[in-house]
Length: 165
Ligand code: ADP
Image (tube, rainbow, N blue to C red; front, top):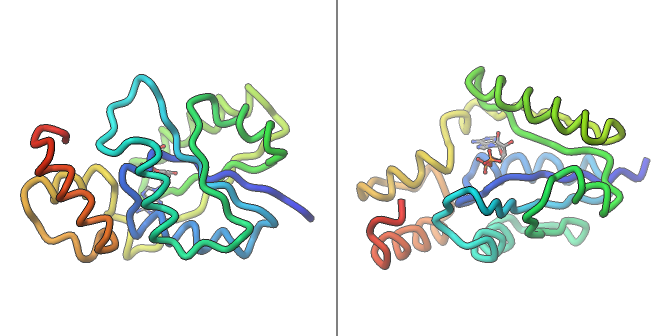
C-alpha cells in the first residue's frame, strides 16, 4: 500500500525522542511528512522555519520524507497532501489523555484519517522539548537529550533573548 503519513508536532526543538520516532516511521510508509505546527496561540522558542531546519539538519532524512510548516488543522493538512495516517508518539501514561483527545477530535473532523500511536523507546521516554529547554536555561548538560547543533542553537537563543523560555 502506498500510504503517506504525517507526524505532527511542535518540535521546539527536535529531541532524540522525536528523531527515533522519525527513523522508525520511514521504513513503514511510502511517504512521510514531518509537520511543524505553527499555532498562533502557542509560544515557541524557535520560529517555525528554524524548527523545520533543525529537523532537516539532524535527521538524515530519506528523499521520501519532507518537513513542512503549517498553521492549520492537522487533518486539513493531511487531506490536502493525500495522507491517510497521522502518527503520534506516546511516552508515558501522562501523554495518554491528551493524545486520546486529539485522536478523537481528529476522527470526528475526518474519519478517513487514522491516528496511529508509536510507543517511545524507554531510553527516550523521559525526554521532552520542555525538559530540554529547562535544562538548557539552567546551563545543564544536553548531551543525552538533543544533537549538538540543537544544543548550540538553544544556547544561542537563550543568550540572545534571556527570557525566551
Ligand atoms: P506537541 O506540542 O504537538 O505535543 P511535541 O513536539 O512535544 O509536539 O511532540 C510531537 C510528537 O512527538 C508527540 O506525538 C509527542 O508525543 C512525541 N514525542 C515527544 N517527545 C517524544 C519522545 N521523547 N519520544 C517519542 N515521542 C515523543
